[in-house]
Image (cartoon, rainbow, N blue to C red; front, side, top):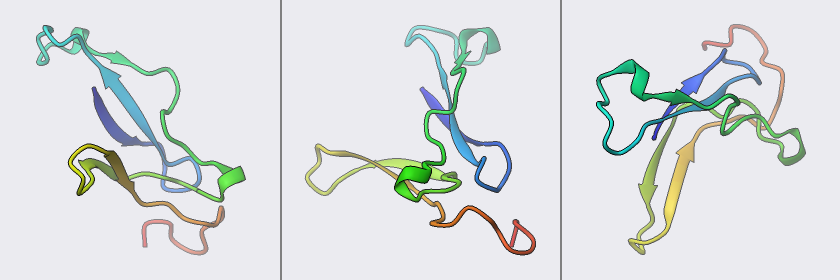
Length: 83
């Protein structure tokens, strides 16, 4: 799989995902399938808005997978959203 930041910089900021078979030619665009919906997005219920730039890593225990991302705890952005 390959994940990427998608959409704008507001509450719509999210993570998309592409998948390919492990034996596929990854340089061939036809090998990839795009997820029809974001795989990680704003959750008003949890107070997480615009989760975007991210990476995956493993916890210090060497077993637990983690995602590290940034998000906001507010929906509206005052001023220029790129600052």
